Length: 273
Image 1 (cartoon, rainbow, N blue to C red):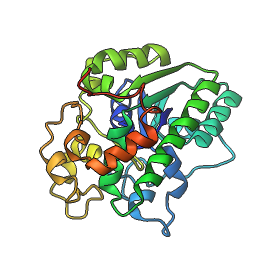
Image 2: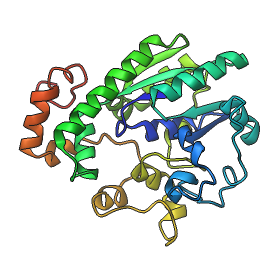
Image 3: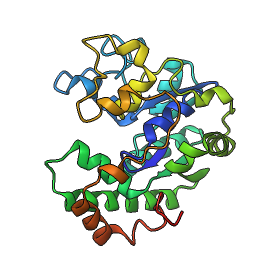
Image 4: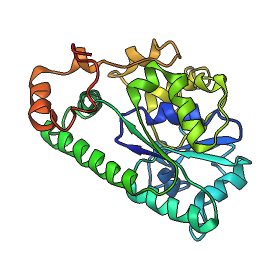
């Protein structure tokens, strides 16, 4: 399971870990609650790559009286389930299910420079109040830290920036902790199949480009705000520091005022580094 804040690279991490032998990446597992619910948008209730005809999710029905991950494992034939939901309450519920079923969960706390996270949120939600978004990020990180500190199973805190610049070393650490078999081909996150529920559309587009790029009905569609970056993406693991050129001076000043001290141990890319 992966905790942390949205826009921190959890989709990338999930796609990588999902390529381990015997593993299956569900995307954001909490979206499974919306499967087959016609009242929800298609992007929330179906596989982001395959849509409603997904060979995995089209015929999956969650019996909420039974442990979710065991059901997914039985359905997919996997014995390692990777979930990037991040919501602390969801993680606690699934962790309790694992313990009750005699299974073992592991938790990765994925952290990223808050300026990069907030720049992504400002880009996606320009109409929303900047101060509210900054506070929301701080609250999510605080809740994730509390969940991570209280987690009693194997756990590790990593940085998105280290994942992007030292991918093999970072993934090996997670694999060693969680008992996953590391294979170098895991780092080619844009190869193989993926069937994610929810998650970052841009990263998923890069991973499934050959399947969705020419499909006019594909759920994975790049928006004008992300098209240039992801359409030209190499497909390799790359460090995204767009905040350094995109973030407006007023928003950066507000972030530093509200969250500069909070972000100090997560800051990356300053002139002093």
